Amino acid sequence: MRADFLRNWRSYVKIRNQAIVGIKFTDRREHLICGLFSRVDGLSQEIIKLLKSEGSLGCPPMMRSALESYIDLKCLKKDEKYIYEFEAMHVDSQIKYYKAYSDENIWFKEMSEAEVNLKIEALKKRKNDLLEGRKKPMRLKERFEMAEESHAYDTIYHNLSNLVHSSIGALANQYDGKNQVLNMKPKESQTNYYYSSTISLCCATLIETLEALGHKEHIIDELQNIMKAVNKKARCVSGIRGEV
Image 1: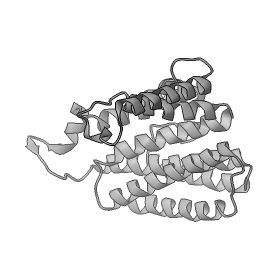
Image 2 (image 1 turned 60 degrees about the vertical axis):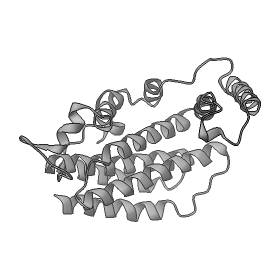
Image 3 (image 1 turned 180 degrees about the vertical axis):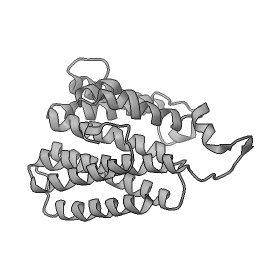
Image 4 (image 1 turned 180 degrees about the horizontal axis):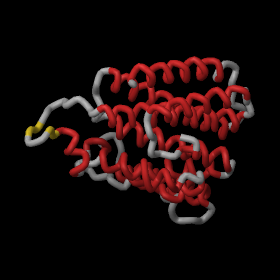
């Protein structure tokens, strides 16, 4: 089974290398779309390396991050105005960071309280401009809904979040019967899930990227064939794009 998944991964990599040749972004939105694709692809490469070394505990946080990037990419593809939402999330995060200022906080030792306050006010203005008066950026669930991936939020994302946090489900991965096991090898079913989900997500992300940039439509069929082949080998819960 593992050999089959790795064969599918190599097929994806070959197609990816062909697909990205000559792709150029012409504006900020396309720039972000290419960046999000690169992030999904890069995280997925790390996941595959981890699985090949018979590790698994680091897969859920990387998969969750990759899935979030896929959702943002789909939103950018669907509505060019989402770029303001995407940037507002970054600005909002910066505001929260600077609000943590105190004289005793070593992370702010190079800044005075007055400088921090000016920074916060400038960021608030930028956020207000981006959101056109709304107080808060979209919630994550709303972003999934906009991307028409609500089912993924309720299933795979929920599952990955449980494994990322220090939950009973996450701790169960380190117990074998009554014994606690350090660096326990993942079960085959778990490994199959990570392989199939990762490869499918990469293919789906590249498809969305190519469609958004209007490049090499013939490659899309090849990517969809890989997704179908992967999911004949292992059931993938995510339902990405309704085809995996």
